[in-house]
Image 1 (cartoon, one colour):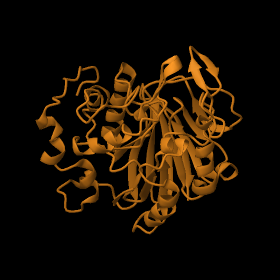
Image 2 (tube, helix red, strand yellow):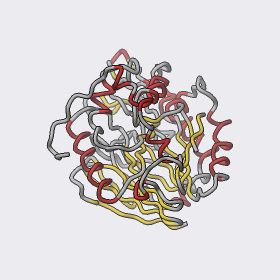
Image 3 (cartoon, helix red, strand yellow):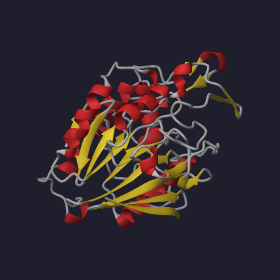
Image 4 (cartoon, helix red, strand yellow):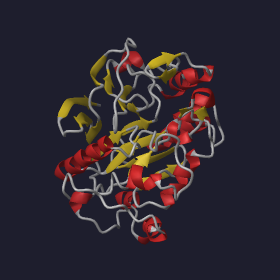
Amino acid sequence: MLVAGCDDDAALPLLDPSADAQDARSDSTRAHDALTDASTDRTTADVPTDDTLRFIVMGDVGTGEAAQREVAIVVRDLCAAEGCDLVILLGDNIYNSGVDGVDDAQWQTKFEMPYADIDLPFYAVLGNHDYGGTLVLIDTPGLGNEWNRGPIEVQYSEHSAKWTMPATHYTFSVGPVGFVMIDTNSLLWDNTDNGDQYEWYAGAVAELRATAGVRWIFAAGHHPYLSNGRHGNAGNYEGLDIGGTIIPNPIPILNGANVQRFFENTLCGTVDFYMAGHDHTRQWLNEPDALCGTEMIVSGAGAKTTGFVDRGNTTLYQDDTTPGFLYVIVEGDTMIGRFVDQHGVTNFEHMVTR
């Protein structure tokens, strides 16, 4: 259900950005359609069972640099060995200021080429860098307030065989898992150009819970509710990083108070997991019942890392030294999450049972 609201070290060839390549989506069965269409001709091993789903979660990936490709190779090899059904991207998909159009060359260098040999649907949410914007006085990109830029990533869904973003916020379900994909950057700015997420959210979650076979609900967004990273906790997000020095937010709305309000009034306790990026670290927050009633995970190290700051949050695991991702296995009433680094090493594994 979708609801809108190889050699490791081998160099990848430059993908053809011509009309033929851009039309790949219409010339072949889209990967996400194949996941949900029972009539698709696929082997049993390719299709998630009714009670099993395996997927990758990573954010802040779109640099086009070496670490992004190194993480992609590990994802490719892990999925080949253990199986994957899809990838979740947690925003900041294209650094530093999103894209100018569906034919922007950055689609090739920062998405299609790094992930060329991962034949899976990529379901993405939007981050502040995807929405562009620059604080002119100090020339800092990623302010997140060029509202025409986010919808370009929605449009690109019709020009890629794997990129999947039907709206700036949306839901979908595969097997036992329903996903709520949130546009936290619009929440941050209190922007409703693409709809009121407060009005949308409760009905979206209710529809997923009513979907046959769905046992788990995962929400995904770019901004964290709680984080020990440089950006920190919603309602108290740090200011700007100027040469390694953090200065207070020159724009008060950027402290994340609107994101905090959305969580505490709307999201907390309604889903099993919330997964975010924004901070370029990997964290599994502790004591979900005391925090929010929802398990909190940060997986924003898909291409780079930044250091921790003491925010007072306890974690089951946290790392700010090595790029990597989260690998999730859902089997019936059990969820297993593994943090894997850019070298293919499993750094942490945790099980949650319903």
